[in-house]
Length: 249
Image (cartoon, rainbow, N blue to C red; front, top):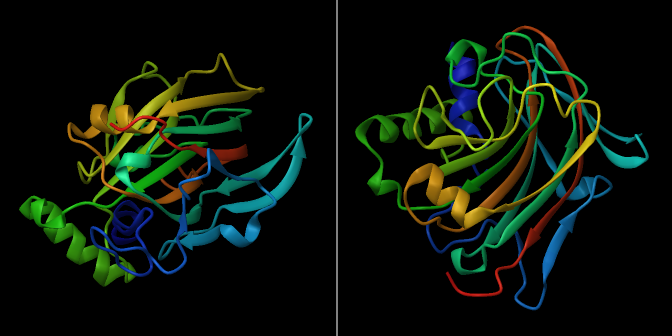
């Protein structure tokens, strides 16, 4: 129970806690002259593994699959993440481009239920914000996160996920905290066994999920997990691109 809570709380928390207007030492800023920044599977030095107390680790490795280079993820009753620290100010938030390939869904997974919250693929974004605005419950969870993992709970975490049954565009609240919200970008088995490419408007998705403007983007993660359902999952992730906003919000 405690390890599952730690997973939820520490999703993409920064190893060096940061507040509004601060930048983690290892963050990669989205420089103003750049149209976009791309992270490829080969950029292993930019991705850091994130493991959770008491949990088996998902395996991530470079692999060619279906004519593309990607990161292969294998989870056997496991959960862990690859994380990249960044710092993108709110006025530079534009689009996020990513791709994945999923051969099969996880039987019994339901991201709205605490004991079935697994997904073969997740692209995860963490944002800064004013933690003094946390509810009493979230403030308590933030302190618990720091005690369990040594990391602050992000102000807000937005996930793009593949759901077994909910419709595309649905927003799923994390069963433990409303500071983690998931947007369904693929649903059901119809698009399995092929590469899927996405381009998402980060600001619009954040406002839809949280009902407020986003703060700075401080981390990006990839996560395949099957620990709650005690099952196995395999997937491939392609490149991740951040596209700088061309007009102010």
